[in-house]
Amino acid sequence: MPLFKSNAVVLRSIDLFETDRLVTFMTQDRGKIKCVAKASRKMKNRYGAGLEPMSQIHIVYFGKENQELYRLNSCDIITSFQSVREDTRKIYTGIYFLELTDSMLREAHHEPKIYRLLVESLHALDEQTETETICRMFEMKILALSGYKPLLTNCVRCKKIPESKWIGFSYNHCGVLCGPCSDIEGTELKFRAGTLEYLKKLLTLEPRQSGRLKFPKASQEEIEKISHRLIQVQIGREPKSYPFIKMMAV
Image (tube, rainbow, N blue to C red; front, side):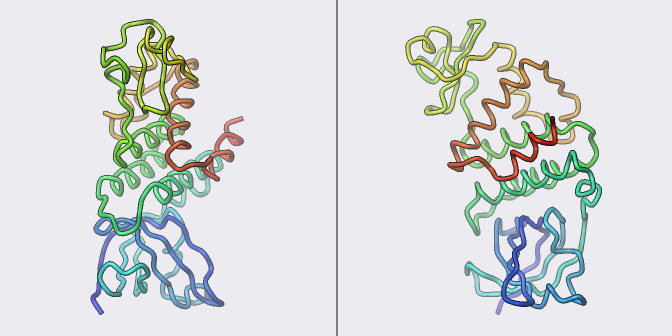
């Protein structure tokens, strides 16, 4: 059987039979894949701590091309992100990144930009003190890279550039509504024009630059309503890890 090698991030790991694990990876070369890690639950095993969720590792695995389940041969840790796991303010944000990556991607689709986004966002989370901006940035960027980029430059109804003080947002059409169209169409959310500029910046900055962006309190709440609701619309539910992020923020 062919042998494959790739850098990867562990998205999740579940027990399988008495001694094995079923591990989901986001790989740099082949997108999301699943591997059986034989005997990985034994006290002494060849994988060590490399199969902990959030770890960035180099894996060697084998199986037939494009099959649904592979067999893990070995792994070596590149970055453990242990300091993120030990920080109660950061760990659930990191888990949230993993959950969104797992939920929004189909298996075996080559997505190097999303792999890079995940790795760079985990590094930014590790290095920075605040988690709010990097969380919003990850939501907006993974939506865009997955094909669900919201239209922020022109009104989705009349195609004109919004110029009013208050702007509407359409979740059905995944984009902004100018003031007049918002009144005609009806919208669940209206937000300040200044918030729109922050949304645009979230799509253009790199994760390591997220610390430069400081949201006013009012804009912070509006941005969360837009980006997180879009995530819910796309995956069809509330991510399981998100309530824990809100709980830790209190």
